[in-house]
Length: 324
Image 1 (cartoon, one colour):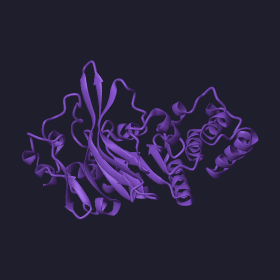
Image 2 (image 1 turned 180 degrees about the vertical axis):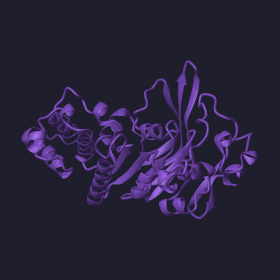
Image 3 (image 1 turned 120 degrees about the horizontal axis):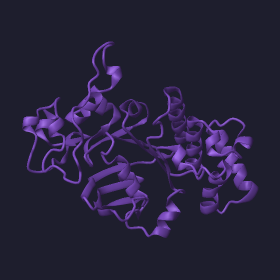
Image 4 (image 1 turned 30 degrees about the vertical axis):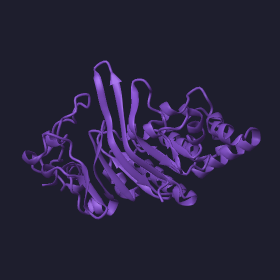
């Protein structure tokens, strides 16, 4: 049984320049202990999908037009703010993309770590501080008893990201959402952060949604992968199946652009053009203008292609041009 079951989620932003179709008809499931990767270029709808689940979309201009998100029997999209506040930060936690802007620069690490404990577990004083020190130690912060009194600017980028992980895991959530947690980190620190998330996941049995644009990261940490483009899922499969036999032209293009797949001295492949303007979404296949690996002439033009099960457990948009 799925811990989280998202059905036909549609989120749009109503701006002065028109309606931005950020997420359109997105569905997926996550089971306890599983890691789901959501991958795609910037602006594909990855973060907006997860922000919608937690009620973090600014309203207005954002608006969830339709869909369900069933978490342990509760529809997150219909839950009252008080009920959602009891789930968010306790049963579902999030590691945000930039730890420098996510951590409050005016508050000591101690206060930021103990705040979730005070809100969700009514734990205060020495007991809360002791738990916070343990959380820092668990994510590899040296001398946690001293460093807990520091401010965010006194930590390196990698250490700030560890603090964010400690803060997200301190309430032992059932679902952890990681919004590009390794962006702007060097490869050594990136590996440490990924290993840390995996280690804590194994210990706590936490389900993880991993948002990233980096397919190399996906290949290391994810069990299943959703590839998003222009606000829609264009392909969904297990990690092994996706990397062994990618079907959609966009997925194949992303894989082709991985530097490690090129010979030394060979020109790196880049996907031509830019993603579509989602305030004026195309009537047919959104990837058609950039499709160089499939056959753009065969792409549908009069309606958005639908996500279809091509082989057992492997879904892709049924656009002939992108499957060619």
